[in-house]
Figure 1 (cartoon, rainbow, N blue to C red):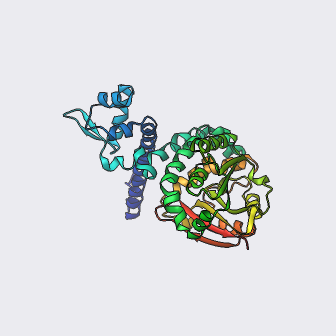
Figure 2 (cartoon, rainbow, N blue to C red):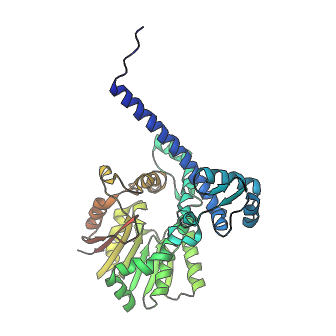
Figure 3 (tube, rainbow, N blue to C red):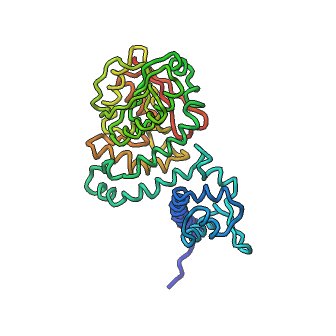
Length: 363
């Protein structure tokens, strides 16, 4: 039998196949590295190592109050993943300060280890999502027992470092009105940290946080009470049923609209709730509405995955339209205009690669 002739096209195809296979193995490695990084965050191993000189696994475990055998195995993944340095002669491990700057709680909004928690959290619903692929529908919020806690930690570290110091000053007209004293609502406020930060920074304005989760509202009220805030209150509210007219001068929505089962209805309710000279600041995912325009997006893969595994499916579970995380700027403008908020100014805030800021007014 004659040996098949290997053409340049065949060789190129084989090389491409080998390169892709290598990439997928890298994805597998990095996916499990992300899972181990989540463990490192939750056990405070990154924080502990940042404060230590080069140390043995036993010394690290003792300082962190953890079991050495587990810490040693975790360190193996961290060393081979290029996160932690290892000196085999001395048997010591070191977290370089350049790495600690992205992995410790002291890094504040730059702490990407917080994001790693989404990997095991969303992986935990894989069976349910696979079933949704087959039968349709979606998974309810109750399928995600840690989601609010992780989301609160993630958004909290960002808000603490940027909301009052950087984000709001990007909108001088809003800051001026907040200083004068106005009525403000945050729709889909979650645990209310943004409301409490603004209420503390602008004591002359009055704030209300609205969310459908009683658990989240309870946490928001507890924080407001702990901070001694008299100008912040919170209500358990289904935003799709919000029945308020001309009450607020300013309404915020921080990454909340794309999660809604009925976003069009929510936006119409927001428009009705505004006073004639009011404004709606909608902070939502920075993306385009067409897939081909999102090539090169630094978090595009992650956002489509999060949409499939959480944002889209929770909307579908409630009989919603499943707008999805990557609904994008064109669709956002369309829905705002449809709601009667047609005067839209879209801005970016320096340092925020995740979001666009839609300042919308009636018209």
